[in-house]
Image (cartoon, rainbow, N blue to C red; front, side):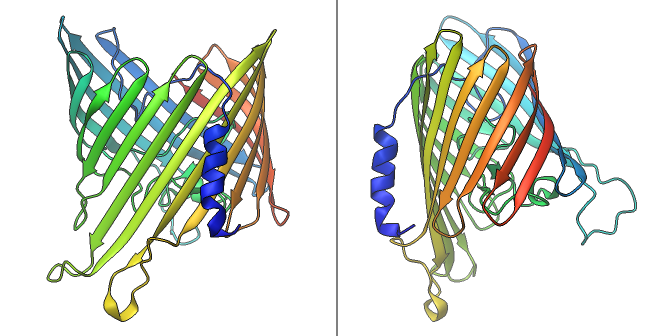
Length: 337
């Protein structure tokens, strides 16, 4: 895909709009709950038929403690994260690789229930996680359970980081609008991210910008590795009788390089383009979905997914994908509540 068409692609994204009622990402989003105590989880376990391997690809568990009065709201939260995989040939396994790490911890304070400030362990705003497929199209680059058999068309969910660094979020949010700023702290880098979101019962628009500038030589701040990323997402649905027609269209543009004069590669006008298209139809508890991942550095990946939902907290399904070179077939179970 020629880079000069990036603007046209994003313009096409902007004019595509269907309609949908959208879910909350209970792990990463900003939100407040009416219950004093709540617990949420997201997890995905898969069997790769093509590789004959089982993986617990992701596991998140978050607990919330919410307090409020007529003006103020306070949420205290903690999130743990883990995965399990034993297939990395570079690791000499003396035991089953299991891990459990602190992903996020902190508090979010709201004034007038709309303006918020949050000090937390995972501050940097991430990519849009909304999907109708069994597998998301984003991975954590240091998670071997995700990267072992994932296609090259899946991209990392944040610039430079596997887990968002600690920092702060500030912003405004009401029932339909959110505008937020996040800033983290990671070694010699102060990454930032801006988030804007408009959500209604029948569609949403989400825009994200991330910027990272790592100082490679502490004694010369002019020598840096710069990475920037922009994401624009639209989604929605339209109901016809017992059928719900759903869609997502999303564009990502990212670039970067070094500012070192001897081997300067940073050019803000050059980068990579990644487009995600999803179409789905839901009937009762069944969802049939299709996804196309289009980019300027790899063949287009076509995927199809079929899921059956159980009690609004679990889905069992399959996903098949091919880019014309390699075909992958997954059977998996997804937990979300």
